Length: 277
Image: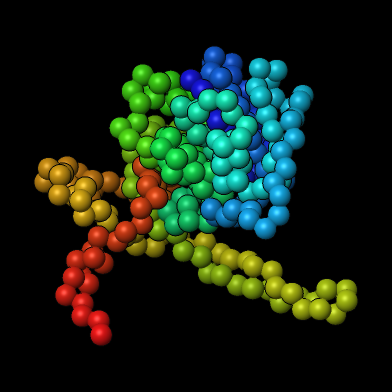
């Protein structure tokens, strides 16, 4: 398959190198376009007020991998690749392997997820891969799962352009409990801003925070049109699925389908009789 790979950890990260080389060794046509430095937590930001530069990178990846370092955000990287660098459209847009999880509401801030979502916006399936550790350095089990998933999608393509958000526990392959299809969960943090003073006497703030564990997970929200076509048994099954936040604690690889349409169906229903003057 023709695969475009990006990330938010930067072109020199171990995660993207392991992913690209593993998939190239499996016979896929790989193009890598990544930020030239770490651009974590940039969300779906775009560069609009200065030029974007891209430099060909050599000797980082396997010889058959084509690679560019881009001065922009993860979303810039995918847009630039699709609009200027590639001769043909890829069959999938992959992002990662991120150094750290992207679970629950983390996806709203994640550059990793946003790069893969850019593929879905352009009508191309996307997959975001994240290793659930900021310190672990063994990306091979995650890359091996990516190879298996891409091989499956080569035989059984995604039913429509969507994003699959994949989180892989940072444990040895033998300790993985399996793979679970999950729904997006909820993560909350106790945010705190440390007030500091720089050497010139100017005040600045450093965002810190603590993850809150074991918070109640939200019910599944259905899009109005899609819900109308579901069989009641399907609706019941989906409502009982664990969230990615829950399943990852049991050492399952989590696979969560996401979409860029953020319409709140219950909100539409609740506002149906709203009268504005």
